[in-house]
Length: 188
Length: 211
Image 1 (cartoon, rainbow over the protein chains, first blue to last red):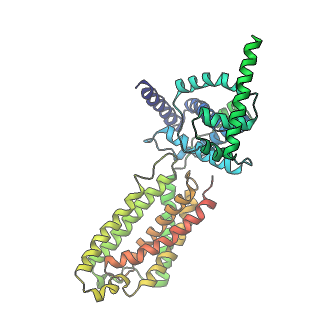
Image 2: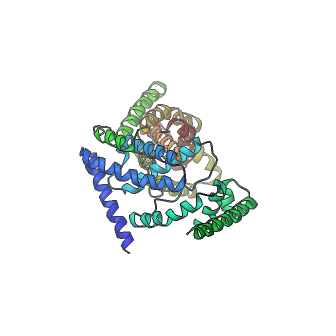
Image 3: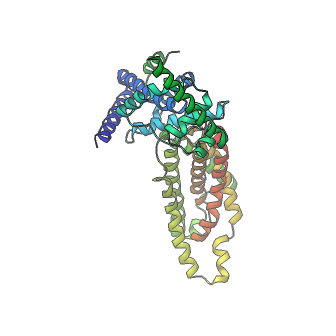
């Protein structure tokens, strides 16, 4: 149950910072914006993998939106849900403007806090360097079906590839991955 | 611009003075006064029908329209706050209608079936719908203007609720004139009258409420 306590604690801190910020304490408000930026970076980063520039643009847009609309925050409601609502709205708006027609899950909330994010980042590091040698389509296909746990069909819908293409991309990509792992083993 | 610099800039701006819910209520009230003035010019002095209908039908109409307005405004405000669920607020709008349904059922039970159309249609059906739909126009303008301070994430729903609030407020104004006496009539005429601005709001929301 520790995880939930941490989430509650973080929420309580964020809410306290927001309330302090709204009463004119700019230091508290600045801390809140920095913490929010971190959360937003991880939220957008997971949905727009490999598009750091877009992610940072979205983080800034969302911070500005949050700032402009800060009077709509109701102090009796969770800050995290409010921030997530704004982030999701900005993400949908971004995807609508975006020329690449990729589908990105927008309905789920923020991921678990610090520890989870930390562990996930840790686990991702090796994976990212391994996946770096593949084509973007192969990366998407493998990431969705083998890492995020979507079915071939869901992955096909999300990437716009056909189902056979997803299968081929997973197959070839994994083949290259195995080859590259073997290669690095040989090099050692 | 670096994100840290942006944050530092944002943190230095003064705290907002505007309180979106107050502004919304204020703008609705202003629009409502315009609507009442319009009714005054077209239909003459208000409350002229009350001696004929009696106090009770007038009280029912006004209480219905006021509670309809209050619940719609609460739902509209919830739709303008990111992260706030509508499921706890929006169903409350049905409450005043549920009361009317019970009253209408009682009226139907005590009236021979050949007279039922009179219960629903009265004699002023069309003028009632027209008055509410037209009266809602200034309210809707004020509501949508003030609503731009809110942060709706579903623009169609937000527009719909803003429109419904405007229609309900226009019903409060028209209740000052309405010569009908039955709850069945309120259901049959006030509801479509208020739905006109609700549909308009639903269609306008995605265009006007973007942020």
